[in-house]
Image 1 (cartoon, rainbow, N blue to C red):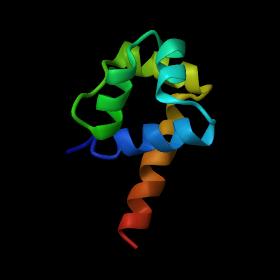
Image 2: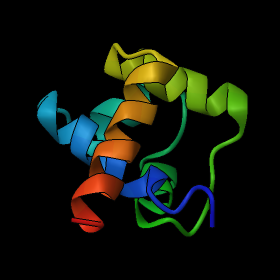
Image 3: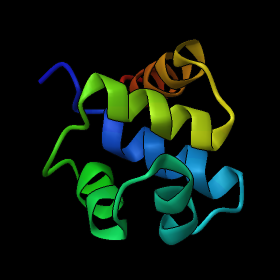
Image 4: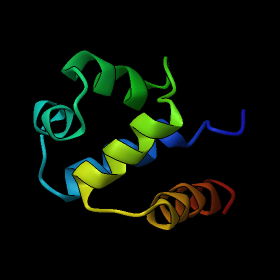
Amino acid sequence: MAFAGLGPALRRLRLRRGLSQRELATRAGVTRPMISSYERGTNLPSLPTLDRLLGGLGLCPADLIEAIEARGSRANS
């Protein structure tokens, strides 16, 4: 699955910023259970929601791609 690394990457980025799921949910305008489902990979955010999540984290899409790729390269090592 192309987005297999999205959930773990979102979680790592959120934790690096010291945010709880609830804090990120508030910043992004979604519910805390939705953050949990994104991080677990049971749901994928829409592009507008992903943009709001990244905004809530203070990141750009390139930062997310880098986080996903970094995880993938460590797994393949």
